[in-house]
Image (cartoon, rainbow over all chains, first blue to last red; front, top):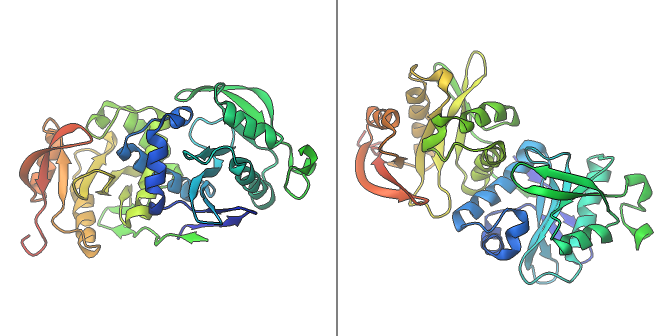
Length: 180
Length: 173
């Protein structure tokens, strides 16, 4: 049995990904917004990508959650802990699906995912990888208190900026109050 | 908690154990997928795509309730290949697929593993399934025929032309 924990924030629920996410997931991966995360993808490849997200939990013991709004249950994106082949170290990653940008959802969800990594899994540090042109994602990393800390080139994803998150002992209750 | 109806069933045969994929299978999987032997199953692939593929095989179980097993040696536990059921988005229907790593070829391992997987599939409601086979993949064609599958029609899967073989339903087998 794979048991993926559910996390709750003030506006969001982070839950394990499943078949019910496919339409939203495939729509995102078919769009130019997915350029920064390996897209655009066909419907078939999006399905495989969703299967991959679930498999990450099983093989690694952590992974990415589907982000839903508490109010209305909209599927607004993915967030979580990701360490695929060839990554320099485990990262906190996020994608917001089309139409859900600009509301602070990625920051709110990213903070919850980071707190899980630090408080539950015992990570002592965390990075986020951001493509240089992905200004939206870089802004989220910055709001989370992460700072540009070198670069990394992946055989598939190419050149990315490494953002280093504040260490657990510099955060207050897992949050980013110190950076607000 | 989000829970999926797993675990993946374990199937034992005379020489083999079919079990769920593990991260420790990755090197054998990536090595196969980097080789020309993978040309009929979407390869050759780089390590990134091989890794995604391995995770996707696990997620397939969660999404569909069935999927691909790692074929392992009963004695040494080493991974020898894969077989099982694949039904990705846009495919015609669930297919029974297989591949065997180079070191284990010619020992009837695929026949033994796929026979067991197919029989188990019947208990999961997968009976009389298809196999997509590239007509140039003569070894797989021979195995399909040895398994009693018969050519049904020409078709395609994710844009690749292939032959569709139909396995006998259990009552007809």
